[in-house]
Image (cartoon, rainbow, N blue to C red; front, top):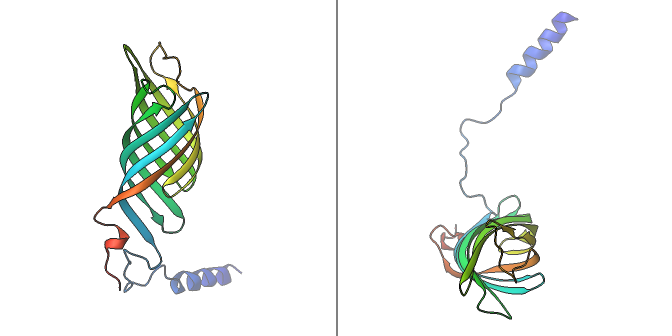
Length: 172
């Protein structure tokens, strides 16, 4: 019995190969798409107050096995009914069915200001996302009129395709 187990293990071990040595890895799989773009980020954030967002950023998105997106941006948001209250922001996000991101915002109002960190989570695909966000005040004084909880809808509009975009590759 022991000899039979040893023989079976010996045959299985020497008959298996993990990979053919002559095969080459394809850096670009047929059917895969990856886009790299300079984008105009537009969005709207609604809590107790409404804020509109406009920014510029870079987005990398596509489909390999699953749809994905990654972006970072610099922009501003302004309160719709009180434009003297605005914020300058920098942010990053990932999408792939689920969307997650974080933004650092410096709010300004004549004579006052405050800083907030905004984590967000929700749903998103490619360059579009619908998220729940929460402003965490990083200063002791908080400006009145800034949302604590909000729903955010954002989309990144293509302004320029960057080198390496799949549309720049020649057809085979």
